[in-house]
Image (tube, rainbow, N blue to C red; front, side):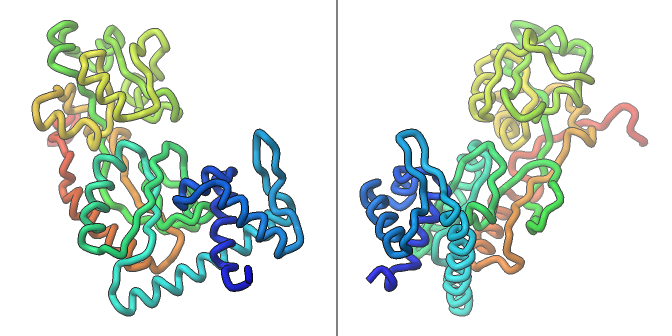
Length: 314
C-alpha cells in the first residue's frame, strides 16, 4: 500500500515541486523520469486530487499541491531531524548533507572538504548546489548556504567562516603590454577592465572608481568568477576579484597585486557566512563547518598582504 511508503512519496513530490519538472527530480534521485511520474500519479490517486498542472512547457502546483507542499516540508524536516538526533546520540556522521554556494567557491574550497569527509565517513552523502542565486535553506530543504557580503535580516542563523577582500590584479603579460597604472583610480580608466555580468556591481568597481565602469571600458564581462580569473590570467585586462579567487595566483606570482593599499579600504572587505535554519545543527553540518574552517585556515589560505593607506594613522 502507498501508506507504507507515504514519506518516500512525499520526498519525491517535494523534489518535483522544487525542480518544477519530473526530469529534474529524477536527476536528483538517480531514477528515471517515468518512475517519478508513476509515483506522483500514485500519490495523486491516493489523495484523490491533482497536485500538479501539467503542460508540454511547464509543471505548476495546484492549490492542493501548494497546501501539501507546506505540510510535506514540515514532515520531511521532522523525519530528517529525528534521524539526525539519533545519529548525534551515537556520534555518527551520516545522511545527506545539502549545501549551496557560489560555483567557484564550491569547486575550490567546498569539494576538497566534503571529499575528505566522505572518505572518513562512508555513510555521508553530499548534494552541492553550485549557484549564483541566493538559495533559500528553508524553502529548498538545504542544511546550509554559503553567502558572501552583507546579510539581510532573517531568521537564519549565521556562522562566520572567513573574510573576503577584493584585490586589484593583472597578469605580468598585460602589464608588460599596457604598463602599470601608477595612480589608482585615475589611471585605471585608461585600462581594459574585467567586470561581472550580473550582480549589481558585485565586484565593487564603483567603490574603487567612484562610479560603475562603462560597457566600452569592460573588455570582458562574465557571470562566473572562474571564467573571470581565466580572463585576467590570459592578459585580457585588470580585474577586481575576491582574494579567494585571485589570492593563490598572486601568492604564486602568476598574477600581480596592484595598488595593495586599496584593499585596506573598508568597502573592499566583507565576511563569508554559512547560513542555516536550525538552531542546533546536525552532526553532519557541525562536522562540515569545522572541516571547512580548518581547510580555509586563519588567516585564510588565500590571504594576500595589503599595504597601509597613506592617510592611515601611524
